[in-house]
Image 1 (tube, one colour):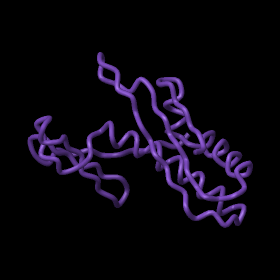
Image 2 (cartoon, rainbow, N blue to C red; image 1 turned 135 degrees about the vertical axis):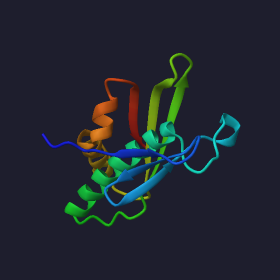
Image 3 (cartoon, rainbow, N blue to C red; image 1 turned 180 degrees about the vertical axis):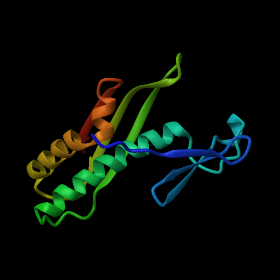
Length: 132
């Protein structure tokens, strides 16, 4: 199986940069947590990765079917547990004004099944994906 590699390098006392192919993403903590707020925290990026991975699959499924859906919005929320620090549950809500809710629901299910991040997290947290 192929391997995906991301390189993380320290920038200063609180900030790192992730090198992903030709992309760079700053990672930091808010000032209130001792950071410089130059980027998102790792946990925030985990939620963004889930939403981005899912949406990439959803948009590919929409394109493959030549459907007129162009208003997808996704909200990803993680419930924090105390000790050890982790997400105990993650909820992803997909919104669209597309009238054919049955077709959209099928695409959401297909996209969840195809998402690497969702498949990885399912055994670690209570993950729910739903259409708004």
